[in-house]
Amino acid sequence: MDASTILAGPLCCRILGDYGADVIKIESPGAGDSMRGHGHDVDGVSLWWKEISRNKRTVGIDLRTKGGAEVFRKLASVSDVIVENFRPGTLEKWNLSPQSLREVNPGLVVLRLTGFGQSGPYSSRPGFGTLAEAMSGFAHMTGEQDGPPTLPSFGLADSICAMAGVSAILMALRYRELVSRVGQDIDLNILEPILTAVGPAPSVYHHTGVIEGRHGNRSTNNAPRNTYLTRDGYWVAVSASALNVAKRVMELVGHPEIAEEPWFATGRGRVEHVDLIDKLVGGWISTHDRDDVLKAFEKAEAAIAPVLDAKGIVEDPHIRATEMLVEVPDQDLGTVLMHNVLWRMSDTPGQIRFTGRKLGQDTKEILCTELGFTDEEFDNLVAEGAIG
View 1 (cartoon, one colour):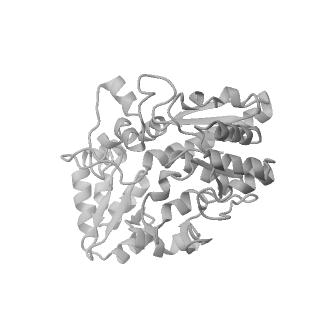
View 2: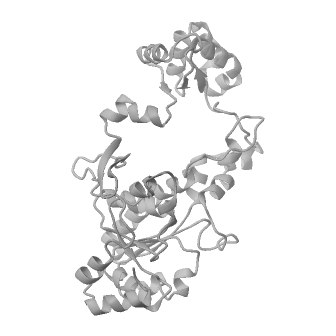
View 3: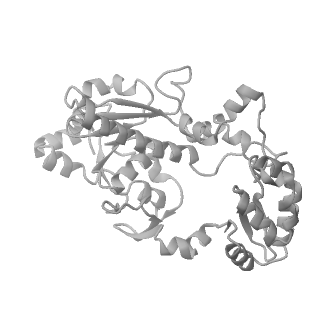
């Protein structure tokens, strides 16, 4: 069951749904998940909702009502996993604690996703990805050297957290299968996964006292690594983490002698001479059109990529050929172009069966056909405002 809202929890459940999980999306009747109103829309239909809630059946339940709590408990009795992102103590307040739910389903795995975790000084604070991006060191390290800390314009921390959540759920299910035969709680917060992704800055500070600052598009580990403007006004990104790649770049731009310098042999040494390297690489790129630059780098087996906007992504021949984006039939819009499943597996390749559905579209089918509620019981719950 997906009893979470906005991005991290719903994306976690969407990934599971892409690979065959029967995901039931729980929403408050009337209001629904706020994600239904996020981002660009077509004729009032959110495109983000269509993707984030694909492969999920939808049920409207007000968990604050007695009847709604009982419906949730019954759904929990036949579920393997619940993903929730209420503030700590909220499920307990509604008498729906994981412990009480495991009284009716001992094997239930509950992923409890919050901004800062179930305990600690910040546990009661509202948490969003923006706060995690700020606290993780990401914002401090992102941006130009003389500019302000920079936040991403998309849900970076939430998305990283979602993928961590998928791994945690699968580990818990595997442990249940092989060892315990019972479920467990997973305490996952949005901050910790991006804190890990940002890298060893805390270790560096602890052992050396060094606090890394902002370096724009440069890297503190290797060079050349930057974005460069071509003659015809396009940006390209170059990365040369490996020494042999860095050598090929310098040969391509007409300065193989630089690669013979003793300092060039290490990433740290190249970073110390990054102004020189950027001047030579950027100078060569600025005198050539983008297509010629890309072809020359490809021929030289030097790493480069165009900086793509949304139009460029849609039109990119590799993205199209490998079906990273696919058109999916939709009940409201005819078809919706969206990201494909995250990875391709030989025996279980994943599938987008349907796009995000209308609020409560599957409530009656699930409750009456699958859980055994009578029509009278269903109507009473509707009258109570417990479901919708």
